[in-house]
Amino acid sequence: MSDQVKVLVTGAGGFIGHHLVNFLKHEGYWVRGVDLKEPEFHATRADEFELLDLRRWDNCLEATRGVDEVYALAADMGGMGFISSHHAQILHNNALINLHTLEAARVQGVKRYLYTSSACIYPEYKQLVTEVTPLKEEDAYPAQPQDAYGWEKLVTERLCTHYREDYGMETRIVRFHNIFGPLGTWQGGREKAPAALCRKIALAKLAGSPEIEIWGDGEQTRSFCYIDDCAAGLYKLMRSDYCKPLNLGQDRMVSINQLADIIADIANVPIVKKHVHGPQGVRGRNSDNTRLNEVLGWAPEISLEEGLQRTYAWIEARVIRNYGKPPQRLLETEVAALLGHAV
Ligand code: NAD
Image 1 (cartoon, protein in one colour):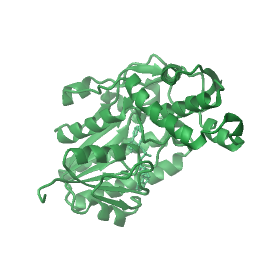
Image 2 (cartoon, rainbow, N blue to C red; image 1 turned 120 degrees about the vertical axis):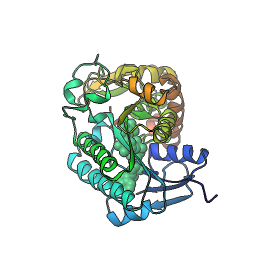
Image 3 (cartoon, rainbow, N blue to C red; image 1 turned 180 degrees about the vertical axis):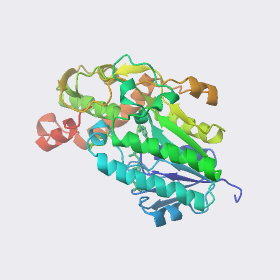
Image 4 (tube, helix red, strand yellow; image 1 turned 45 degrees about the vertical axis):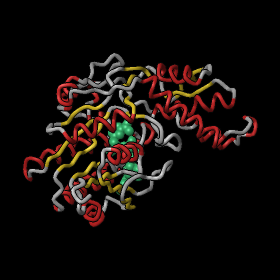
């Protein structure tokens, strides 16, 4: 067992981190998970799990001790509602997390370091229409991310590049495009569009009331990638020798209205969309997967419908468990909690 590769996953209490720990355990790694919180829905399979605030340098040194590789996922983040209204907090917290985790990894002699960036780094001026041209990695510059979240990701991408050039650390950089799946945040304000829509449609079904709220006109477009493909892609990138930023997402673009229709079909329930004012992010975004295919000889394989089927089933079960009483007995505050976070 002593020659087992030791890996740290930061953000292991979160959505992608928890799934990645499972994936790495399945691959035979020794895994330490670190987060501010334990996974919310299932116990972790990590060999060690430490509750540490990675904004602090001493905690980063502790987290990175004795590991060969780091998957850096910890971030203060959420869906559009959160990202568009917490700029200072996000930039401050994530900058501290990433500056300290990367430097601690260097001090501790970590050999490989994978940083999870985001499609949010791409410039707003390339994403002004719904029928947008898919984004290639080189489209990142001249830089003009929409939110502080994207600016911080861009700076940490550069930091990883300089650590490789100046210190010889093998850094990898992935840009996720909307990852979704079971065991993710589905209510409370940090949830993303797929989870929010699954929750609203499950509630509409439970309450027998077809109306669901959608932020904006719902014509804004995105691509959505299922979590199992995300974990597989992360692992392939870490094992590859590719050190520049790489998109990881699906390249099938749908509007938020279409996403809602697909979920309603899966739920087998009629819906009426009520378009309300709310943050929508950029108008259109899609991933150009040319380089992903070239570098990894692979691209995400799980269809949107299949991924949504699994995600909807999981969220519907949670809605029923949490709110599964006759609709007239739902408290007003419960309905507000469920309906109040549109996409
Ligand atoms: P998540 O919010 O579920 O997980 C992030 C985890 O980081 C959380 O569990 C949180 O508690 C932890 N964290 C926050 N502050 C911390 C701190 N100070 N110390 C230690 N841990 C801290 O998010 P996720 O969807 O699993 O995202 C994982 C990574 O992927 C993040 O870096 C995110 O920015 C990036 N990303 C995700 C998506 C997506 O669609 N989910 C898209 C683009 C980029």
